[in-house]
Amino acid sequence: MISPQRVDATLLAALRISAGLAGVLLLIIFFFMAAESWAGLRDIGPLRFVLDASWHPEPAAANGSFRITAMVAATLAATAGAVVLATPLAIGAALFLRFYAPPGLAGPFKRIVELLAGVPSVVYGFWGLVVLVPLLATLGGPGQSLLAGILILTLMILPTITLLAHAALVSVPPAYLQAAAALGMSRWTTIRSVALPAARGGLFTGIVLGTGRAAGETMAVLMVCGNIVQLPDSLLAPVRTLTANIALEMAYALGDHRAALFVSGLVLMLLVTGLVLAVARLDASSGRFRHG
Amino acid sequence: MPACSRRPAALLLALATSLLLASCGDSSNQTRLTVTGSSTVAPLMAEIALQFEKNHPDVRVDVQTGGSSRGVADARRGLADIGMASRALNDDESDLTAHTIAYDGIGMIVHADNPVRALSPQQIIDIYQGRIDNWQAVGGPDAQIIVVNKAQGRSTLEIFLEHFELAAPSIKADVVIGDNEQGIKTVAGNPYALGYVSIGAAEYAVGADEPLRLLPLEGVEASTANVRNQRYPMRRPLNLVTRGPLEGPAAALVAHAQSSSVDPLIRQLYFVIPQR
Image (cartoon, rainbow over all chains, first blue to last red; front, top):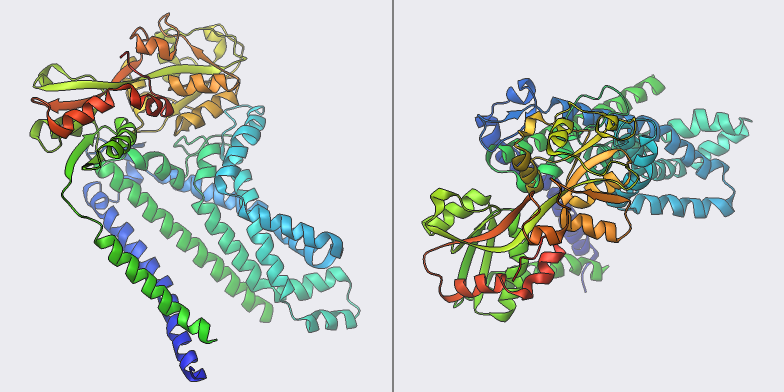
């Protein structure tokens, strides 16, 4: 027989290890990226990633040009567009699910959203390529465009945000809602001034995860965005995101070209970190505002 | 609860065992063949090597990529037993022998509804460099030409650039794609697109009823048959490169790669089987 104290101690050790592992893993990945990028940063120099004329990489730094700013802009534009579109839709769906849907509908609806969250991204990409892109092509241009990317990403992060928002709304203490009802608040007032503020943390977590998924998504974006390295002058213009660039070129890249792709991966990681921190700050400051 | 607490230990044990097993798998009284070079040939060669190893359990074939130039250099300096090159040998490489295992042909494709039946090489160059951007200029409808190009580093792009003597930065594309499948879906989904893919992949797609048409080039129909009989111009050989007399397992591997038992593998990768 093992004593309860022993069990507790073992469990604590296991939990410490798994928590430590998550942190260490992130550091290892970061150092790996930094190490692989190092040759590129040394041979090409950080300035050329911003100041070069274009993105036409070559294995030898001197022959190529390595500007990645247009791809950074494309990643930001696609991510921002998708988050702006998906967030209100997702929170609306979560509110419907939690407060308005009749019980007979809420169950199946939630199942469908869960299924959507599990659809592999390449399937979304394929659907985008054969259905969405030809539809957008009727508006002029190639159809493969920033807009196609935004729409596909919206579809992909919608279920993620919906499920997390719903979980946050469900965990609002029932006493809050009962108190609101006792005060004679309408359902909408209850949602607006009790449920949403109380679920704020979970909603922001959903948005953070959605943002991360949108910025990091590769296959679907690669298939529908057209992959032209340029600053988009309209929503219908094709763009290439950092992730698509890495996926398109990594298999065949040698020397400094390969290192430059790792640099763009590093930039993407920093970008996602920045976005997550920014959303967390937003969360904190809106929290102060509420209680202040 | 006790069952729970034992689990991490069991997991660690399993992990340690698997590491131990992995580390003692390398028993070596095997012959090792190193094959290096072209990233176009490598996927085919890797499949061929697997097939070869099944019949020759005493030989291990190690396929590494690094470009055709590395394949030639490694074969010449003896760093590899066999080099891979997705081109014919140059005049200054006559100390080496090329063994063609397959051909790769690239065909221009348009949507099946596109009335344009052929494009001259100059028209293709003008379209890809942005001097022609409307189908009307080449006898088609009044619509913008959607120029589909391949991503940097893809061998299909290299053949295309080499054939039309174009430089990568001079191309003004509307869509950049990765693999053949994406190119086919892109052109099949846009009536005004113009692209190029491996002829084998395009023929397969046409057979699967994709709304797609291969355009002839310089008057020669784009078909695997015309790549095989060397009439179609935009093609190149996929070669194994060796130096000096071939013997032992290396000779066996080259012979196997040139035998008809690799035909299904060649077809699977949309390359063209040479005349045997």
